[in-house]
Image (cartoon, rainbow, N blue to C red):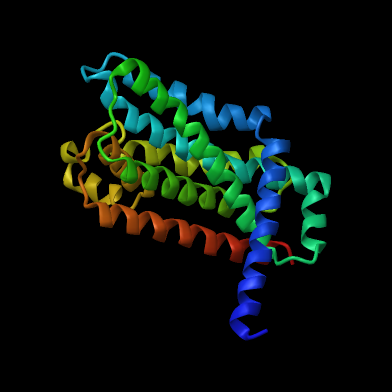
Length: 253
């Protein structure tokens, strides 16, 4: 076999291992109370607390609800799963298996991506069925949901590198980042209505580009260009994953 064939076979085998890890996590952990609370109930109730009483069409609230749901659901998987597996020694067994450590983390990230993408369908269905929401660009919507899920899932994996066996420790740290993102990312206050200094902060938040891209997919309008939104979500996800891998390697030594 030539080098290309060997590399292709290795990548295929590593992806199969990552997929097996993702499926295992989905079967074992995704209905845990901590995942349901922080991944679904908390973002929904928080969004409703700010949306109720606002003089805006209900259908226009769906993009923001989807973005918030993706942020909390995808980023909650790693912090819920990895500390729990440290406590039960499952994570150590994975590390001792004849697979790459990076393959393990990619599998954890993939599981969070799939979980949050599936959860994001719920507010979309509600909007389409009862609130008059329409889909202006299906491809942009799929890309927005997929890249947002990847970026925030990788962010959760990065925070899960903190060496603890208690998921609550990681969730507490993570909320110090997630909660401020809600108020600087154009979800509740449109970027156009923000003061100049707030826009600078908003452009540093991946949630800004997530909300913008999903809004374009549903409403056909966005603040930034689709190329900018797409590129920065890919960049943020890759950055979170790379930093997370480095931190996990550092703390497991």
